[in-house]
Length: 115
Image 1 (cartoon, rainbow, N blue to C red):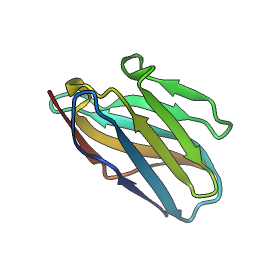
Image 2: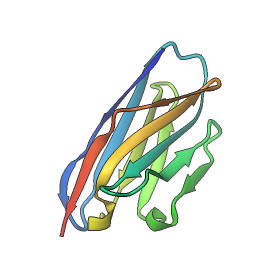
Image 3: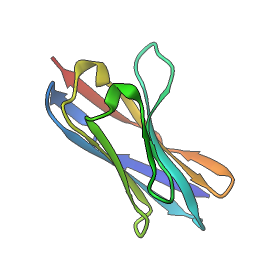
Image 4: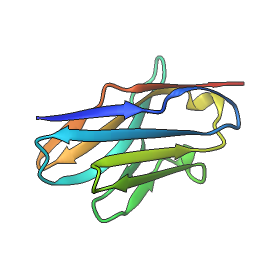
């Protein structure tokens, strides 16, 4: 079993920055893709950014140029650096990892951006 622990969420003013972290632990053999998703109130969960084991990245159009995803394979950790935050970025942010053939989700961390 794999556990994910997210941290770094909070309240920030528009234009500010936050850095989210998600550390995986447990029965880890090989982590493939890692990613961040978000779900705003009344909306569906959406992909924010993803990174493959080789370092290739993919971003939602709404965050390109503002958010950066990275990973530390030695620590089984994925990060999301969020700059120039906007009120519409307010959501619960979830990390997801693909370990072998299984997907694992974190419990989420709340990001609130005030105007």
